[in-house]
Image 1 (cartoon, one colour):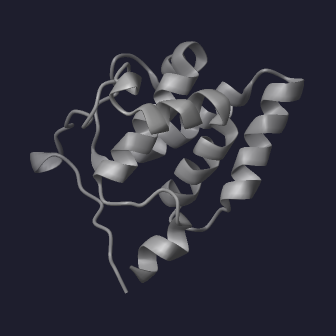
Image 2 (cartoon, rainbow, N blue to C red):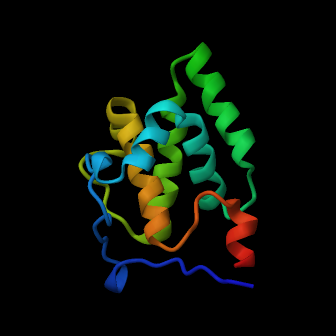
Length: 133
């Protein structure tokens, strides 16, 4: 069984993200998923961030419904950005998590997706698949 390390900066210091918020075009596949299927992308991110305790489908559906009926999906997705930052000791950059998700939501989802992938996760095989490999 594989183990995934939760890391933080040296001595608890915050460290930078592995890619920038606006680096979407550096990875066209991720960019396309984020633009056309942000609920799927968020579901994948959330399942990995929650270490399999939540399902990709359920999380994506929650965000879809929030966006469809209230336009407040960003209030929910920003909580996962905060969880991800805490897990890996990442800077709150370029501004607060809620502001990033409210004004650059798709870019934020793509950055989080790339961050998880750069930490060794295969985002297409869900949590169980990552644990098995």
